[in-house]
Image (cartoon, rainbow, N blue to C red; front, side, top):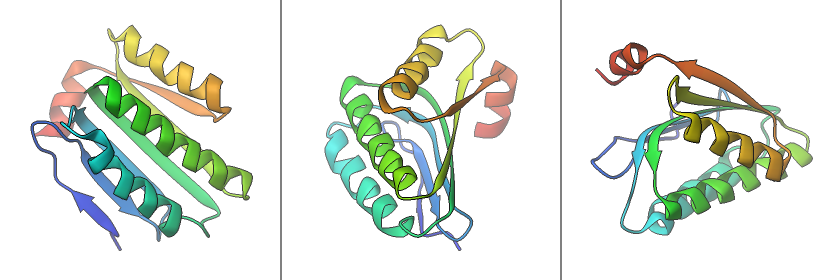
Length: 133
């Protein structure tokens, strides 16, 4: 059962939370005027919905995000780290385009700072276009 599904807009990513199977998905672009207004309710739902999950798998496939979204993503990952400390296995799949070294390095920075394990998945541009279509 899908707990939350947010369709993408020009400034916000596609988001889907499914606590029954322990899955979180973010895809697209994140440049909302107020990232806090977009991400704070999402982080609260993650904290509440996934509190009893043994395993949480997170797919992050963002093409671009602004500075305020970066801070909010950090807060989301910090929440996931707390869930990991409480006993959940947290798997983060960090998708990036093959020529986007900045996005790869950003994932590595989150991983280093928070001590979470990231799996890095390189996508070819054609794969990304197929997923969006």
